[in-house]
Length: 341
Image (cartoon, rainbow, N blue to C red; front, side):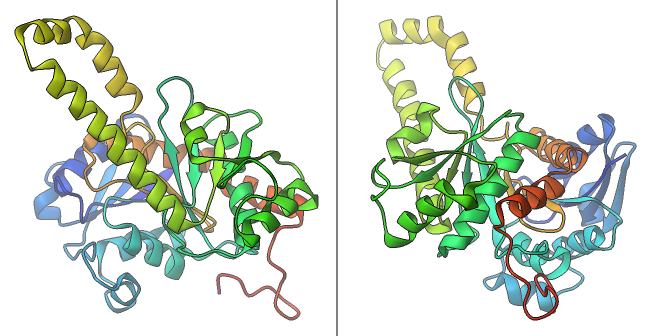
């Protein structure tokens, strides 16, 4: 049975909501170690063990300093449980910064990995989600980082999202190989060459193509990724509000809204941000999942379930194997590798 360590601190709806999601996941056969304030968590279902950890650093201004200086924090204890082998994956409902810092300092980067990436499955109206990475872990990236992200995303898309041969693309300002910054052009050349061994690399795509389903994995640096994600979230949210407002303007439009309500429910389900379970920290020695703080119990249950599936499919080993085959792992420093130490 897979065991997942869950940080209940920092969730917008409170630790009890995270606990309810943990109980739902446990009912499906997953063992959960739940770290958070026991008094606020309350009763939990069978398969969930509560470890009292009332201190949260989810709102810390300097996550790295907070992780180092607050070993008793819920996210730090959860990450340490994964590092010590008590659990096989980490799920956090707090901030991305604290989850990333706790993962780096405790679980550590996998051997040969330059930097971990934050990957988000973006729900599509029709068809499977599109995996975007990096969406915020690294503001700036070198070409070798993006090459690794491409392999990480492909391995995850295959193992967890079920894509048989994921189509991998670079986000750029044009489809031609010469489009983009010098670094992006270099990444294109590497992925089209030996560094792309084992990848189904389809080249560059523009921002308008992300939601067209032409690629299964879209690679970018964390700055562009985070801006892209926020724009997509903002536009989609505003469109849904606009449709609702327009449908309430007259008796006739309200009648029309009533008639299309079943279709609108299906639409909201198709683009439900809780369905993918959150964003995934790839490149660590164990899988990490960062659920959005606004998630309900259903979203947290989904995050735990997908983390467990990643363990069962051994996505970490699959990623390492893909990077090894492509010769994309970081070269050891000196006579032995020091990555993640």
